[in-house]
Length: 449
Image (cartoon, rainbow, N blue to C red; front, side, top):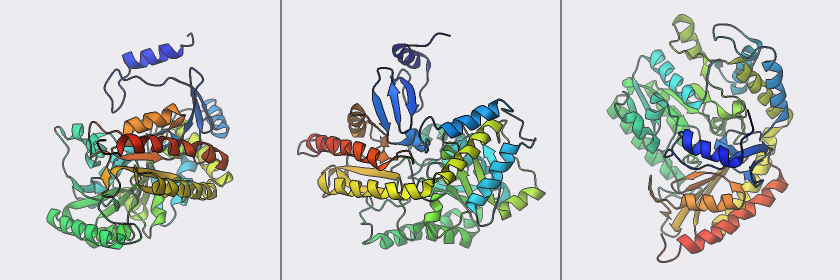
């Protein structure tokens, strides 16, 4: 097969690909190669990947240690059916259980994040005998039927046509958007939201609720960090009503926040952890559910009615083991904390300097800007699911300058690969200053958006 030109790659994509969350026929940048924190198009233009693509390429592109592990495994054994034991699968499961600690006991492997949440939902219902799943409006859990219905943002709408039963949403806090100030009155915010959740649980019937599914830190919808005491309060409500707590770590796990899992930033321990993305550095699709002893023991006596052809895919597990090796051998947790502080300080400078920046949120290398058109009144650049949001224009301006990232509604996420260096941060962060200066003038003046 001949090598395609950049134009052919773009044309074929536009003609034959149904691109997720887009209209068919959407144009796309043709990417020819990627290495470290960078990728290049066919014209040789270089982009800094400041979002780890979809917050999944945690260890950058072209990681040689993971590639070598994949190559070695491909020459020995690529795939074995889930009912057979393989070295890579058994070893990775053991390591993940140990990484989670506490009384976590077993792993069910899936193909990705949506599958992980889908199967966690099924397990919660089987274990408790209850039907309802509560989840947040400010959330995203994946695009399969159950995961979509559990998601709170607009991407659930198509899955609700015909629907799935038992999904109940509640509003989770966003300190800034809700009119509070972090470090000033966030405990008041926490109290308000926990009181409302407790009331809603009682109206739904606590005895009917199998699980509360939450992103430990909301990711794609703007890196929304819970206010002080909120996650602990949710855990107490789960215990009060016998509800299982599922923490979605698909985006925030594997040292993104400086901890192995983001829930470790709070004084809680969930009953189930869902994961994907960073477990293999996105080199091979893999996800899973880590369950505690109670759930594991239930399925020693009862049949686990969950199954996937590629559950524990041998090649994927080899990539997972190599990725865990890299996280450990290269002290990624410590590096994230160090680089995260550099990123946080720069973001705080941008918050002070620019009219279009309302609030910044940063924990490790998991960060987002809340963009506004009126800073004093906290009016966002776009209301929820507004079709003419200007954020894509800002993201396009960043991309023109080689700063590739993504955002939604009024959020611009900055989640670079965890291997990013101080020099690389200092080279690319000033692009934000340039583009925000442009945005101040274009969108924050009288008569603007």
